[in-house]
Image 1 (tube, rainbow, N blue to C red):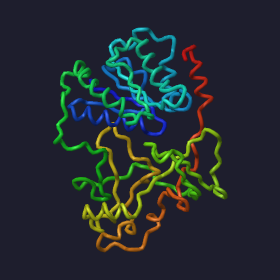
Image 2 (cartoon, one colour):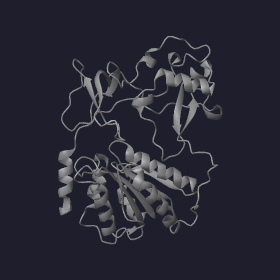
Image 3 (spheres, rainbow, N blue to C red):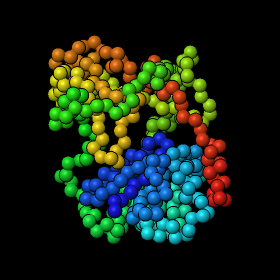
Image 4 (cartoon, helix red, strand yellow):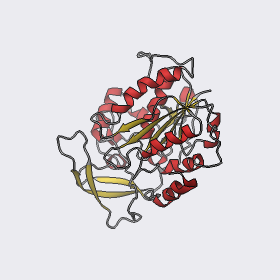
Length: 345
């Protein structure tokens, strides 16, 4: 039975950590599945052999919105104390010690799993964004202990990683009409529709941490005056679609020696494993080509920027930023209800 890696994320950091664990497990010859907590069938948890949880803490000690339904299931009083007795578990909590309720989500999750009979492989890892090395300060030494412990669960697990092995790619490019190995591929992602994004002006991008501080934290001010669909409330999360600068694309494409004919062919980015999520439709649409204007260094490419190339995300005053039309609403009310569930806090 394969290792399961489940994550609850707010900003994507937990997903990145979980994906890194998944890659390393695969590199160690261990079959592994990767899933966000809201997409994993939580009721099948008792049948798993070993599970790694990567859990971020959001707000004031809260679970990320995508993890709250599963957490509520875990809080049920009807669960037996030996529900997870056949399962080995390890938990990584991601937090920031500048907050009063530091890593509360990871701590509560670990405690509840043990209450339900799970065998802990290691004490909970409390990764701190305030550490001088960031979350790696706690995560790296914890992982060094994890793999030997997992070897007791999975005998086929390799104790070392082959440094010469080819890295696992998340996606493969399949060309429209020709596909991979000549097979045609049809897009399965929703094309980006007009109105999905809003273009707003970046008024200010100011660093708020000292120049000597290792973290570059910024206050970015947008001007959304006159932009329809940009209503918001306290607690909303604004998501920005990034785009590569033309200069960066030109350097990469020149190094890769891609021809204009190849760049003009529509293609799809297809996940190489069922654990890899498809690229978001609001990033790549259904299928796309690399805009010629973004790579004037490629022989035969047009020098004038195309419409796609000029729609880059702004990071400095005066640039444009593209943001989703509907910001994600705060789930504070739902979280309060969750924390009251069955009297477990």
